[in-house]
Length: 435
Image (cartoon, rainbow, N blue to C red):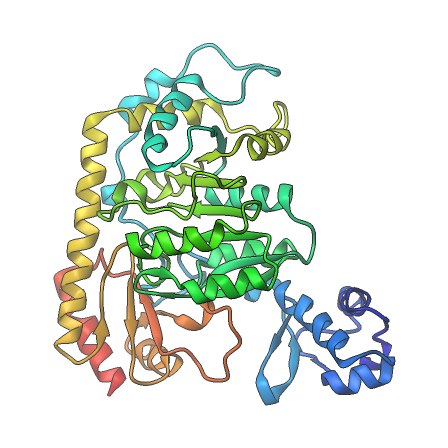
């Protein structure tokens, strides 16, 4: 069926492959023709065929396997956070918070009910808006911002990209990257441009290269980067702001997902003169994943565009949920329990990393919910050996954006909720799996 692929432009070729896939003429696992062969048959430049395959790859429809060629995949092969479905193994790759550390909302629930909110009323609860403004103000270098409430950070990112970008626009993403960001960019039809991450956050050279490649948006995790745990250092943040100062209309999205749990200071890419920005703080890591709410502090124009996508009667965030969030976050005892939870995650992960290093396995905990472990052998090999011992882990391959010929040598582990005996067993099994 490969000879049915048609088109004279990259977009036309990609559309042809999509249509053949939708009709069942091309099925998951099918190999597409090599670039040179396709270009010769269609009478187009080789770069046109390359661009078409790149569009399909960024949309998550194909995967390039080196000498194995370009193969069709299914959207459901994109990795997702959370527990693996239909699994009997001990899952230590979930990225979940400890449910025992999530504040009980029961004492606040009775106070959030009252007069119903009707169509045409403000979409943001006034108390939450005022509290949010006070929360983010010290971390923004400009007083010219507005607050918007969305149904979580992923919802905010999707809407922010949709109001600023068109299909096939380029977006700079950290590499390795948060799974939801990869998924959102692919499904939106945007092109992900990887920016390497080191111990101080996004690299300067990587961001400059992405801007030179024409990215129209940058998504950055300023602290507790997922999966590495890295946080922007003051020096790195200043250097990145200097680079971005030459591109004031590139949309900067900062996903400060770990905010209240983090022991690291907040450093920002958003300079005082930057025109398009959004600072996102969701509550799912400390109030629970089911609390689908995020605070977005954006420049006024971006706020207006977001408001059009959050109009009353369609997709505003429930005022009951907004009031519940405000009731919890404005309670000093709840905030104290959140700080204690942050200390718990740091202590558990730091202790586990130290025990791994005693077995010559490199693991440095910086911040966040998880532990990023470097292995001397390919991670899929270690993952398979751990499965035989009853553990399900997540390798670094799913977090990778740049095409690589070799498998990842990293695992992302969620170990903060293991008992002492479980932690000891996992360390022994991991040491044995590494060999």
